[in-house]
Length: 88
Image (cartoon, rainbow, N blue to C red; front, top):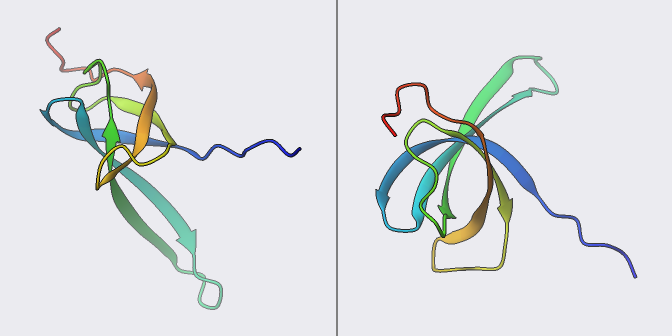
């Protein structure tokens, strides 16, 4: 049987005010096929953070999981880089 492909993304935490939920923005760039212009965009994801371990400004890796709530279908894998201005 074929193995499941797990989607992972890397993004920055922009919201950490809710319990066990964080808002992560993932930025990406794509070159237009015809004109060659680089189009930049960003997507916000609500992620599940069971232990409330990531904070505002952290660079995190997230993976796609089964729906946890209406808007949360991504979960925290690891913190790639902690924010520099973090107090704790």
